[in-house]
Length: 176
Image (tube, rainbow, N blue to C red):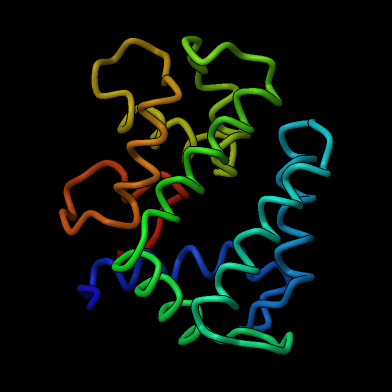
């Protein structure tokens, strides 16, 4: 069972991927989100759309939905609860997504990203918000975030119950 803090973060995530902001998720929402994300970081869209559709398929599988239908906020929350408590799918999915980003940006796994790239990668509003979030995540103040650090923050975003953990901002400011 999620805490209120986790629930708010996952609701924020829902709002990000509900592309048309109609309060339900469809395969089109995830397709459009993947396409926009790829366009934002200026890379080919095919692999990002495939990752989003992989998530869509997993949500439907864990919810035992046989026929495509829009997923409500409640469905989304329930799918997260099932996935987070019964498998390592989310951790693997997030690692694969981070690897895809690094590959798309033509970075070696040992290379980091600076603020300018981070703003696009995190889909945070460029400018003050993205800079604030980058500075919170760059706890060692080295000016670079590495693949393993962003992976940790992504996983921590969903699993952490610590409201002081910088990961709560990894997908933009929210009301958690």
